[in-house]
Image 1 (cartoon, protein in one colour):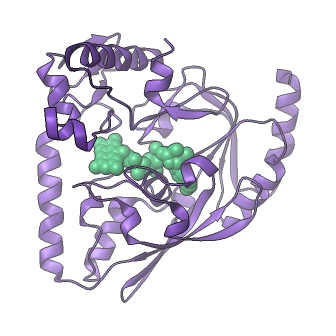
Image 2 (cartoon, helix red, strand yellow):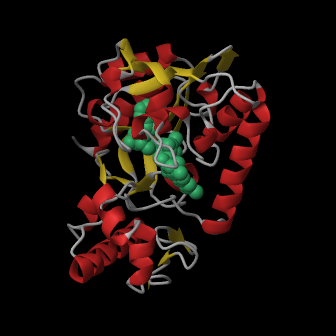
Length: 324
Ligand SMILES: Cc1cc2nc3c(=O)[nH]c(=O)nc-3n(C[C@H](O)[C@H](O)[C@H](O)COP(=O)(O)OP(=O)(O)OC[C@H]3O[C@@H](n4cnc5c(N)ncnc54)[C@H](O)[C@@H]3O)c2cc1C
């Protein structure tokens, strides 16, 4: 497809009832690493019906399309995306809490959800209080901390499929496993979820959340843009040599820098952007860390962070790093 044809197709899309749209949007303001080029078309739907309308219009077309939340687990290519970025964020963030059950839209910010759930005397989201993403991103990634995942709380998820159909998935349909869900393969878009959060002692829940936040403040870099933990931990690796942060630190890689991308001097499983870092620099640093650890102890460090190519394809960042 020529650039001219793509531009015309995107103009037609933008004229549909799909929510707020803008052209040539810098992606660096839509991810926590503050990295990436421009998106040709950036859309923020306000209703599930608008998401469905957009997906139906894209179905069968060759226009690349990426769905994002807060971009706290994504590395966008320096060339941006020649297609559409759909953000399920603050414009789709309704929340209804009743005894034991929570109905929340995909764009709700997780720390806010966790706080509101605690304020109603409900429990189960304590481990999510410090995760700066959206509910949709958290469910797609089965995110969590303290070896937990949000999948444990999911009763059902309402998604819009890539063909534009609205479907209701059960917890089983989502196939949750460690930092994975079936949504990563199907590309289905989370527009709403029902979560189960049992009644509990509010003071105990609050105190657990405060402890979690205190621990994070002490351990994680806060001043420089980052994407949280870059590498995944595995049970086997953890048992024999420890978590990725320890392994990388033991290899003497803390503070290693390529361009403006640096292995955090505070926590070695974080790569920080010292100002104007390029995606290519982060990828080179990931490749360097992987190679060093492979040669040193024989373990493969795979990425939790996902790289978004200019063709809209999402892959674990280490797969792209290996091609460099
Ligand atoms: C400081 C910091 C700390 C972090 N701590 C943790 C932690 O403790 N535990 C943890 O698990 N993660 C952590 N993360 C990583 C990240 O916050 C989580 O993975 C989060 O759930 C991603 O949400 P997001 O909205 O930012 O998703 P994005 O980064 O925008 O997207 C991530 C993936 O989800 C998909 N996605 C996004 N929205 C939707 C949707 N509505 N429907 C379907 N798919 C969607 C995207 O296509 C992509 O594949 C941390 C990140 C940072 C920066």
